[in-house]
Length: 236
Image (cartoon, rainbow, N blue to C red; front, top):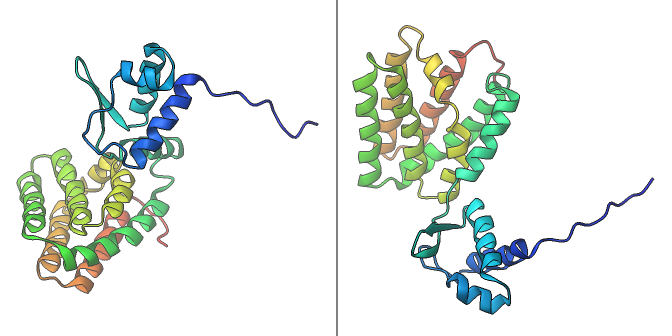
């Protein structure tokens, strides 16, 4: 039996896309700046404009550039969208409930540390963002579980932002981005919204007071409680 299979050579547009990607990663082009035109790149690479246009499509799919009609291609802001989409497909294939215990275990590992760091580094703007999420939770506790759940998730994202470590935000966004419906179901239990609001208030007060251990403890307790409402799962 053959150990190896035939190698399929990359097409020209993909080779060019790889080179432009490397230039972007190496900061030859800063975020928000315009790339050379299709014609300029075609001349540099010695190919047709159609080949460059196809290369731009690869780069756009990778989330590296945006294309503005009549203007050209620009280096895109880094985004977690591709990571979120990939994890979303993974969760849909597994089923969010089948993976729930492992998912909450991962959340406790990450969000506990997020709370600690947020308590140490949160600015006035961060505190204001957390307060805004709490206000929305209070507003919709009785009239819209859907809006409540959105405010809940936004609160956790705001805590991650308050760490001022961008990698923690990148890790958390895709992890909880597909939990909206699951969390909404948990809050449909009578009294759960009130209990959840109090838990978030406790987290907020600890972060505002710069009490990192209290913030950590509050988040861990909240996530255990949240998981317990979603069924009988073994916690790790």
